[in-house]
Amino acid sequence: MLTDITLGQYLPGESVIHKLDPRTKILLTIAYITALFFVNTVAGFALCAVFMGCVLKISGIPLKFILKSIKPLWLFVIFTAVINIFMTDGKIIFQIWVIKATWEGVYLAVIMSLRLVFLVMGTSILTYTTSPIVLTDGIEHLLAPFRKIKVPAHEIAMMMTIAIRFIPTIIEETDKLMKAQSARGADFESGNLIARAKAMVPILVPLFVSAFRRADELALAMECRCYHGGDQRTKMKQLHMQQRDTGAFLIVTVAIALLIGIRYLPGLI
Image 1 (spheres, rainbow, N blue to C red):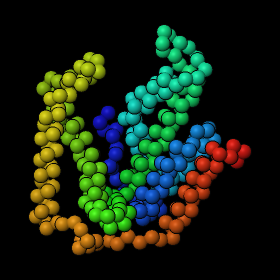
Image 2: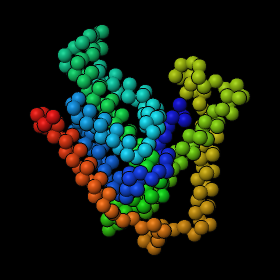
Image 3: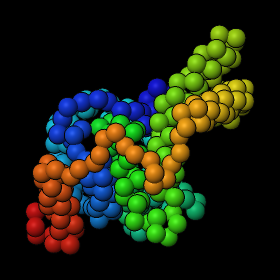
Image 4: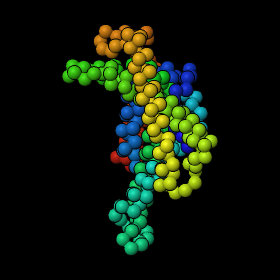
């Protein structure tokens, strides 16, 4: 299960999407996520599927990696679906005491589940095709205008990127600890949910110790290299918008316009 968590992983490549400016990818991802909340029809989600399929094909990211990024969310998706089915008023399908399922709840459950899946797909493609260093530069440039109101843009970007970067490392460390505990007779598979949660307690202490040790080593390494953020820091690679970024903006803008148009103009498709 832990090996299925792919957040923060970067897959090097030479595709057009890999070469896009990180600011372009961040802004387009935000726009795509926002547009998802306007989608509530079969045609809209079909267009999302086609769009994401084209992006995957162009980026060269294998579908199995995207499926792995979705797999850890199935419990959350099921929980969201159940809440919508049984907590939404409408035409009743069946009722047991005060618990009732409605058709409107089923509709909302499907909509919310699909939104979650497509949302994870979009954010996964962003991290798969953008290295942490480049992602840091992109976030810092986008936050730069807020420096006028004393927002520490560089520090915020660095903290966000370090957090994303260390997710795979912490997951790998957790997997090693679980294997070590299993070799000593610990059982993480049997029992109910509460029993499994209790079995995870011996993992937490060494995991936190390891995480703090890694953080201290990182801070020491940055200090030894005379690292300091702020306006005086230079970059080896400067970010520049190119024609492919303009093309990406145009294509995604058309796709988002179609998604919104499908909702408010039913006769569009």
